[in-house]
Every structure is written in structure tokens, then in C-alpha cells.
Amino acid sequence: MPKRKQHDVSAEADMTPMIDMTFQLIAFFMVLINFAEDNQNALVKLPSSELAKIPEEQIASPIVLQVSKEGKVVFNGDELPIGGPQLKKALLNEAQILRAKNLDPSVANIIIRGHGLVPTGKVQELIKVCQDTKFEKFSLRAEQGKPKADSDFLKEPKKPNAGIRG
Amino acid sequence: MKSRRKPMSDKVEQQMTPMIDIVFQLLTFFVMSFKIATQEGDFNIKMPIGLSASQNNSEVQPIKVRMIAAKGGSLAEIRIGDRGLGTSFQALQSEIAAMAGADLEVEFDCDYNLHYNNVMNAITAVSGRRQGEKIIKYVDKIKFSPPRVPQG
Image (tube, rainbow over all chains, first blue to last red; front, side):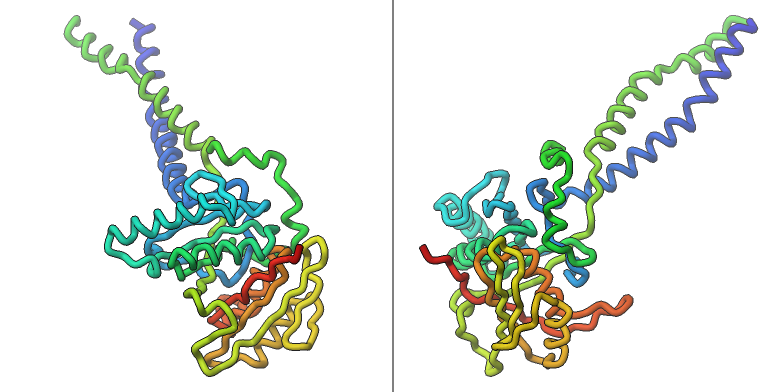
């Protein structure tokens, strides 16, 4: 008899607060993970700016183009050279999808997430390619914060590829 | 005696273990994939084809900001017209602030190999200034000159 009683007490008293807390932690991380999901890419280290406008509402038909330091565009998971036919094809495809939805490509927003050290000419060439496929609204994305110097981009994190799998 | 004991022991032996296993797995998943993300914002630029060049449809001539790159791609000089401003974005900002009007447009003419970061800093300097919580706006309309493709 006395053995059993001890057993009861320990089983009921311990679990509830722990589970409460664990669920709270899960809820916390779940909420944050949705927030962080938006098109991050480990190859791209954005420039930062204090004035970049955080979009107040959902951006209409966003197309996110990441530009890596080497001047390659990462789009839908593929790395494409800027001058190449694949990129143009992919953009034409997007334009066609928009037209199928009865939207004009000119209403779509091309979001350019460029690495801080990519040559500006590459970004301009990318804009040109987009214009050729009838896109005309561009958003240059920047992190919120004090402006960075070029040297800030050279400080590579220890594991540059760590985020890709996540 | 028998009937009293049984329901009690049932309650105690509810299987918590699988639930806790799953819960902890979920927790580890979320903890592992957690990445601190800084807020991101945009500079919006409207550039229909044909207007990207020196052509423009407004009467006001855009202010041309020339950004010259050093060999490695870092900023060597900012010029407005034929005036050199060194590499100071502050100087660029005060120049623009002095000119700022309702319908001002700035056109960036950058060297091909200039690091993109410098362009973003220049766009920031030109578009306004933050004073405490308030943002004082200077220029809204921004465009680019055609890229200066390196020869050879």
C-alpha cells in the first residue's frame, strides 16, 4: 500500500507544468518560424538600410530573385546565370502564369535580393532581362538597420551553407 | 477495496510517454530550424522598358548621380554633375536635401563593377533621413542609367 501511494504522487505532479511549458515553447517557435520563412537564402547577404519600407500589405504577385555574390540568380531553387536563356525562359514562364490568371506582368513585383558585393552592373542586367519579359515593378530589398560598409560583407560566417538545409 | 483501487491505478498509468516523445521531437525540430531573421524592407522602383534610358516623360530633368568604382568594386567617388563629393553619402544627402523638391527624380549612373551595397547606401541617402522616429523624405523617384558594360 504505501509503495503505490508514492507512485501516484510522483506521476501526477510532474507532468502538467512540463507539458504546459513545452507546448508554449512549441507555439513560440512555430510562430517565429512562419515569420522567418520569407525567402531567405544563405548565399545572399543583404545590404541594410534604415529607410527601406517594410511592406504594409501583402505584395501583389511577388517574384523573388536572389542575386548571389558571383552574379548568379537563384530562382525557384535553381542557380541561373543572368545572361543565359534559362533565366529568360523561367521569367517568360512566370509571365505566362500571370496572364493565365488574367493579370498583366506589369502588376507583378520583382523582388530583388542582391548580395552586398555583387557588381551593380549584374543587378542592372537582371532588371533589363525582367523588363524584356514585360515586368516593370521592382523592389530592391534591404535589411532594416544601419548602412553597412563593403568590409562588413567580407566577414563571412563560419558556416556559410548552414542555413540552406534548414 | 478492489473497485476503488483500479480506477486510480488506471489514471496514473495513462501513457504519457508517446505524447512527450512527439512533443519533444516537434520542439527540437522547431528549435533546430529556428533562425533569427531581421526585418526586411524594400525600395520600390518602377522602371517600364524604354524609360530606363535617358528618356523621360516629365519636364523635370533627373539629377544624375554618377558613382565611380575603384578597381576592386569599392566606391571611389560620387559625383553630381561635375562636382565630386568624395565617398561620403552624407555629402550626397545634404546635396540632395538642398535640391529636394516635389517632383525630383534621381538617376544613378554606376560603374559596372561597383558593389551593390554602395548603390543601396546611396539610394538610402537620397530617399531621406531618419530623425528619431520620423522619416524625412527627399526623393521618391529613382531610376538607373543603362549599365556600363566593360569593354573587351
